[in-house]
Length: 224
Image (cartoon, rainbow, N blue to C red; front, side, top):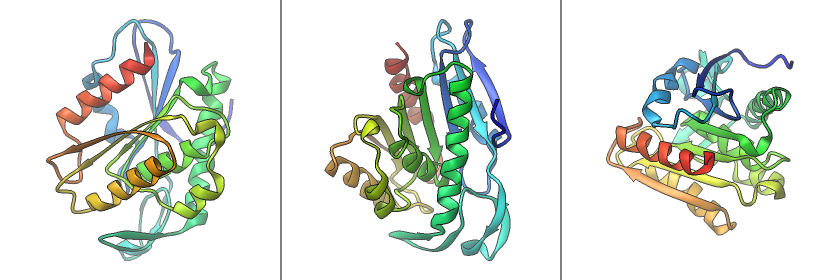
């Protein structure tokens, strides 16, 4: 079994897991952040799903004055319409995600039954990690986030995941990751032929009950 990032694991259902969801938290949070979402998704009890909530490493974050906090990569600067990031850190987090995917493979879960989800900075890693993964995954859930490096994605987009289902959502009043960044990611993917299921909610940089219900319905359709 591979030695990956520490993570919280929750198993849903009355049967052994046959699907996995790897859910990446946002900047400054930890793996516990989205654990309460699991029972709210309304997934059927007769489908086994293992939810994995890894903890990002603690690193100095330049845009936050160099404070050390859980982060998937360093953000060097930010403005309303863009982020300047440490690409090496982003690639390191992609490798950490790949370790988690490979560990699920070792536990008997095929890539086609693995979903990658993420919120904010975690969603940026989810986008890159899923769309550049060499084997076809079950889907990607990108919440209140953005494409962290369009040039990197253009270079390394995996043919195996050109048809990956994408659930993308954003708050219309988000003052941390501006809605325009979420829409830029959506439009970039649509322009490249990806199937994006886009949702927008009247909220700030957070999640809401309606969003969780929509994610649950989207997942159920793919677990059937």
